[in-house]
Image (cartoon, rainbow, N blue to C red; front, side, top):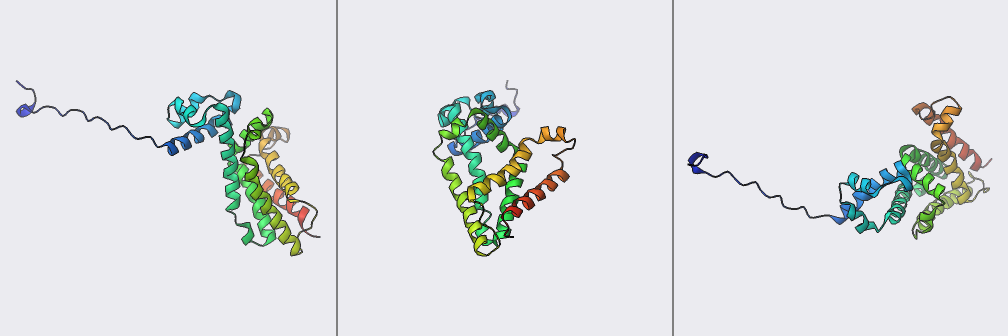
Length: 223
């Protein structure tokens, strides 16, 4: 005799329909995971299996999409560079008065590093290695051309308007702007100990931000 009422059979469990893999979404998830892994452990200490686990993907998909760990690292580096370069283009500096445009760029450069410690970590690691992955990149140099042009055009507009001097070229100016902010964040832990203050506190970061803007602008403002 059936144990089910009226002899009804228990419904068979439904078989789940396999989800079709979205290559683009999987690739992006792996790159997101790679940024986390490489920034925390460096190229040498990073593990492909951890990257796959963070992304919720099969480890073999890392090799399928990216070939090997070196290629994954190179592409991840290109990606973090592209993200900051894309954001710079979104500032629409050409729409602003030259002084406002340059102040906006300097502030953005500072704020981006404050908000993206993974960018600093990956650049530090690549520099320590001697930049082999960037040397193998066919894209990274071209990514920076629009930035140099942007600074060059802003400087030219300011010189023409009589508000900027012509002492600095765009590359040197960018190196100074980046250096003023990059050094602060990349050495924040050691500097905090040396100068016995928390340079990561909101108050200290705000103070440094204004200093960087004022310092850089003072160098280019026409006297």
